[in-house]
Length: 282
Image 1 (cartoon, helix red, strand yellow):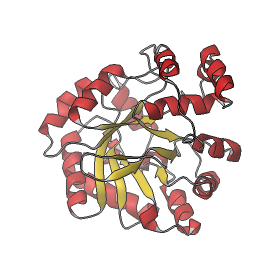
Image 2 (cartoon, rainbow, N blue to C red; image 1 turned 60 degrees about the vertical axis):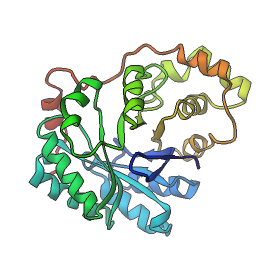
Image 3 (tube, rainbow, N blue to C red; image 1 turned 90 degrees about the vertical axis):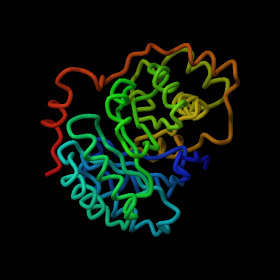
């Protein structure tokens, strides 16, 4: 498995299994167990997904040594502010049944971001988390908050796929020495993406699935990629990305698919209030 070195010196697997919107009715447990059995070693969850407990149970039952796994979770905006965030971090650990997290993120760029970040720094210093980062920060929101942090985030997890390649943000993060981690790398199953004639044509030439071409493109662009599936065949297929490489010509062609439009705009008015009402963690 390819890895990236973060700006704090820790390493992160380039490919991970995400569980956003996977129900905590046994489905998350089964999906994570299948992913771990298939060879994934990076699992990405969040307090707001309300499935941390099933992720933790799957990790425990897998029998894989903890040091061989990379586990990410995220603090929800309901628990922003220093004191609440300190409790929120420990709540994630308790639900997961883990002594530490490899990566913990601020899930959204709203409300008391700076107080929450201080709690993440404290948790890192105490050994409760190894690396800390953010999610859904645009360049403008980054400049609004990050310059006031004592330490720089290691990761910014954002929407990224061939139709939304985040060129401005990626250039900004590269200058900052921060890794972009891609959520929704397949466009949340967007039919127009998976059936795009260019992607299908490239897939045919490489004798690969369209999803594999998309994910391989993202890896070669230097992103960490978080894929989600509860289908055993897709879980295995999404992992088979490291025995081929796209040509420079095909990479250039895929870059041409960028529309610079995403499914979510973190700067949209009312976005914070909408998310706070939609997702509750307690």
